[in-house]
Length: 261
Image (cartoon, rainbow, N blue to C red; front, side, top):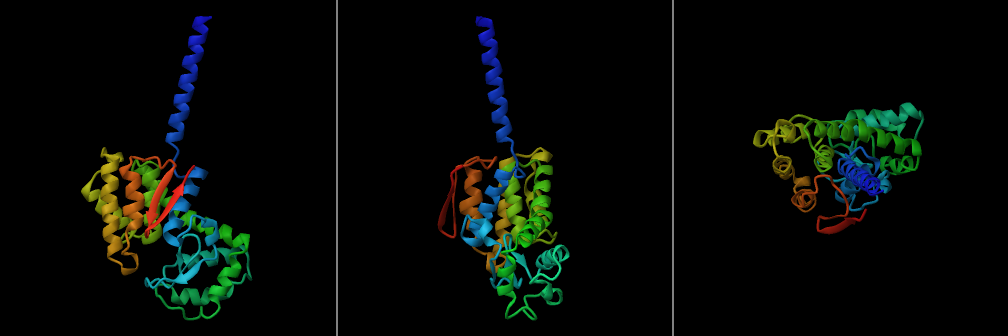
């Protein structure tokens, strides 16, 4: 009887240990972790944790990229807004934004509003009430930003925090290879420290990446406030929270936020 009890206790302890390990190893593709990532980005992009309320967000933030809009900051000047509206129109011809496709093609690569004003912002907000447009935003976010950044982070041996750090960087700086894009930031970081996949220390590498990210942000006037690095990502890293497990408390632009669970 005693032996059976001991065996049961060992089995229970093993099960609990394995469960804990499994939870600790959850990456950013887990639905709950992904939602946390979206809340973190929204706190910096929209000063709100309610990222699902941002489908209709649109404004020109004077960063040289034209209109910035939606859940991930699709821009009229950087091709991702154009790709989004094309996808939406392929899925739902005749939608309220379809008529802007010729103008979006012309302003791509510039900060111009030509052909978009005066009603584009109003029509964007109308489209944002359509679940088909919301789904298109989700899908383009994943295709252009979320999936590539998380895949690269996992290849580099990074856990959930590192995956988020990559994701936030690609959202702001784009997936290019120049010095101020995600690829260039990563290249700079790798010149300073090895990734875990290369045998390096994860914390050391992520600090190097955040250093490179800050330098890229300061190179652009519209992004020179680096609190999303200093009082958000660096806080999680300093706390050793490499799995990005809640509770999470941070500040962006001086505003405080908390995700309890």
